[in-house]
Length: 258
Image (cartoon, rainbow, N blue to C red; front, top):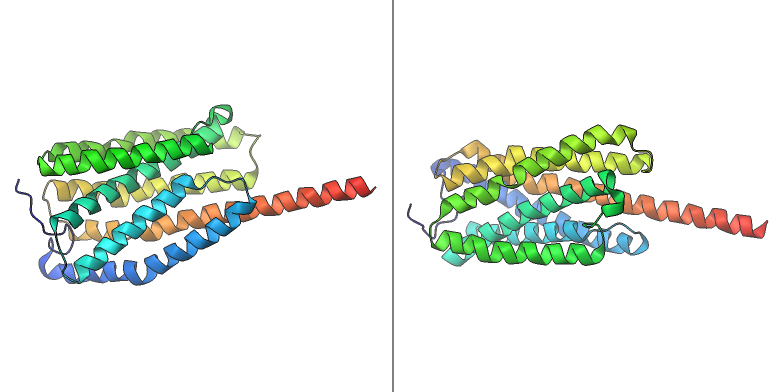
């Protein structure tokens, strides 16, 4: 395998690459502004709630970086640095999704052991994810050890399956969690599951093995749209927490006045 400076999307499909470039343009002109808007909305609302968004914020950051790199490719500015950065960020994006799935799993199955939910643990995990991706992925690409990248891409698969299956089976019998929180957890895990197995995994494996697949790249470029739905879930959860807190405070005030 010979490593080149060509970007992994627009140079892989010949004439069909024009459609892929159009999808990249949609990511730039639609996903990019929506992502910035959601970052603002979530950061504003979360100040009044107790919902942790550290993993979600890092996931948004990876999306923004990927879209910025796509912008350079659309303008035909290519270099080995942008390709390496793209793969690092793409892998970090994948592992942050895995962290979100694990966080949802622990919050439902083992709420007293929710080690991934508190702020200090979340920050530490995010730092470790960035460090791992920024060191291991470039090293594997420079040494042309592409089997390591395949392993990194496949590693989250059993975790997504396990978390989704266990959580879906346990939700009906969980009584300590509000119904709205159950719906958010189920929707989040479902989106993460299908996003991984329909978009990320097939495209990563096909590209790493130098197998061209036009349809798989279309699904992959839809990933930012799907991930934006995750942030509507977290934004809705933040608003719901704020409303619940406000209602509880009103009830307490009424009781005190009586």
